Length: 399
Image (cartoon, rainbow, N blue to C red; front, side, top):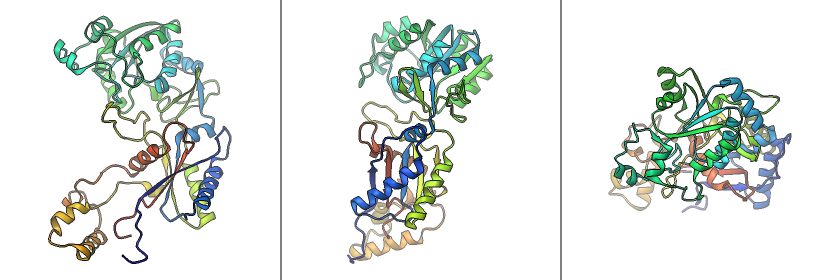
């Protein structure tokens, strides 16, 4: 290989930053932190590097918080004195418990309808073998709490040991709210109990709302409709409401960040002024991937990335090297093989959808792929790297 050949492709680096507080100038902090890291570690920024920051630090700098009382006020304003059907929530102390506390504080009675055998993101409430043995059809059968306990007993989540049926039941009762629990997968099943519904699913919410309204529901809101405007001076999210929120304290949630396109554009501009390089910038939350053991799909946020620069629009347009090596150029080897593959990459033009040499590549949004990489890099614990620098992501074999 020549001395100019780069032997490293994509590199993902977690960047340590100060602890972010409300009102901090996040654009300056992120820019300074990335440049300081480059100087400290002896690397240079390049065009099309990606700087990504967690949605958490963006929301914190915005001060985008709401209290349990704020949630309760919004529930009261939207549902009045009606019994509220709370359907399809995910099973999470971090993601939903505080929201449920506020919902219960704002209602007199809740009919809690849980999906089974698992919630939307894969947290398991029931065992498929027991479902089969009992002759239950989860597509149509509605189970009472008594029937659920009879068939499945206590079924805590594998990794946390929490029995969410009991946990959510007690949480609702602790707010002085009456509760009934059922298990069903058809949205309209809730209408046998109440025609006022708060649907808490994330990625299927539009369909759920449509089916409920078609079936005659009187009041239908989603979590994206709760706190979609300020309540008593609280934070809010105009697009997603409570979706994407996280527990902050026992009585407060941190909401998904509000409009943050200006932030990513400002960081792009500051990096250009400081280094002369045009980088891409994005905000990311949960990655979009599934745990093969726990069967949990990571994406509890409404989107992976709520804001990004225009260079991150679209999907990868790549050729599969092993397909080219095993098929088109199966008789070549060494430098001849390298040259043939390099020429194919350089000659690719326009969309490769349907091209056999592109099969097996990942036809997902760039922001979903890069956001997943960043989520795994930054982790969810104490790494202290809420900013991630990805270099070489847009390189290919010829670079």
